[in-house]
Image (cartoon, rainbow over all chains, first blue to last red; front, side, top):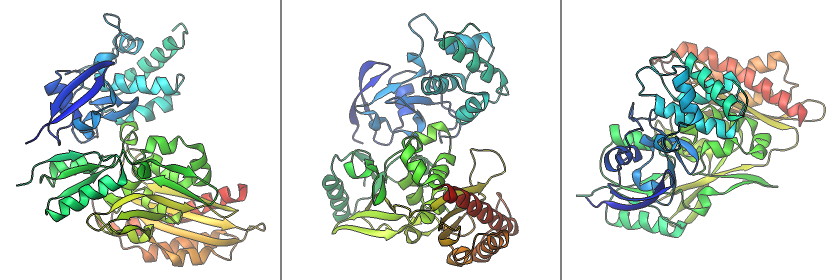
Length: 160
Length: 292
């Protein structure tokens, strides 16, 4: 089967890879690029565990073909922290214990970042609606919502 | 044997050539827009190899124009872009409501209006709203292009009117006449992230005195395809949309429905709810029309 050569950008770094035409971006990230922070939950676009950004738009990597990344800019959980320094969203997820098993966490953090970039002061309802595509079977969501609210306040420069 | 391949044509001519040359060689192709339905189907129910033709790089499928005479929505534009367009929401509020109801933020980042129509689910939320807005499909075919009223585009469960080698480029909507507004409502057992049990799209035109001079009523998830219900529109036209008139339109929609019983709801439940949703959607559309 003829593999396709793809030139793209992942977390700001130029990347090239070969992938099968039908292979998902999720598979490419995890299997080819070894960026395993992006998780596979359902692989049908229902759970949000594989949330990434493509040219800044939040999508499920399982519903994007690896070949579609050609010429695009992909953002994954691995690009959220600044070196050793956690992003405020990551820090607040830790402080609020907004995770248990952790499978949904990378997707939730990528989705939260996308939310706060377009809406720095979301209401609780807006947070819950925006993150409705990220399923968490452990926390009951309350701690996640509080972590997002606290992260938003921190990112706005307000003392928590 | 055919193997999977991917093509991302940069022009419509190139896209049509790819489709035509595959047809000549009896090779299978499938159009990819947002992929939120197509990629899942390709991995589950229909895994056969094909050439995936990505239409997201075409000018024609990316054009969005809310213009003097008509609105044009390219078939490859994701919901997130459409929902953020204030002009589109002002002119076709019910259509944008229907788009916005579909899936999560992640799905909205990919799913397209054209894809929802082509996927031809009986419960596709945008389909009644497209029909209520007098949508017309703009289709590229080997001989040039053709247009087809949206209510004729979906021909069965998961089946659309595209012939082999054709591409849905976009949807055209005539600019609504003065005093016109639309609304879309659906019933689901939770607040979001679900598939319609019943859907209703209504557009009404009111004159200065508040009399209804034109109407379109379309219903979803109550028949193999979304249905345009002229009898329901007829009940509205000529009236001032009094409560009994709205109820009559709802009853007409209920009579036109051909629902099934499945895990989402019984046929009887759907017949009742479609009347309620048509009544309420007409009421919301009228309220909006009075403000126009």
